[in-house]
Length: 249
Image (cartoon, helix red, strand yellow):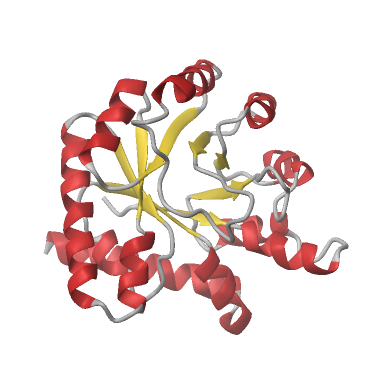
């Protein structure tokens, strides 16, 4: 099975908000992603609304047909918004006001008591819940204990090691991703992966047999400046499909 591709449109909104006004429109980006063969749209509604806004989430639900994966912090404000929006999926992520992007995975093991209510309430509302975690067994076990059906393995450290030319570190982290995916799937979790992936780094992650979905955003939006969003997404899909074809050949 070729992994699904979820396209994160946050940074279309970042560009829009840098100047104000309505352009570029993240909802239009979602519509282009659909035409390019994306399987879903991911959007992170942050506490400070630095990119995606409440109105964007509302419009995505009304003006696009692709399933929406709402990335959100485990706060009462975000829970209330998610219950109203009823997205297809909600991915619980750590969030720090001062960070530029999400730094590291959620500490599901250390925050079990806090997270349990959010996982339960979202599931009861019919939303598929995932936890954005590091590829380590203790966090996978915590996801199982919380009853989250999906985990998204954080690939940021792998991507950073690749970009820095630290091949040994990248291979070690890739092994961690393989082990985590194997353990998680064996225990009944659906395995997703994402963060920091590019054309140059996606293939080894897409080749992990247990990975069912990849969520990629910043690189695709950046590459769209040069080649257009449609072409960036279609090329990423080709690389993902090629990686899985090599795995099964």
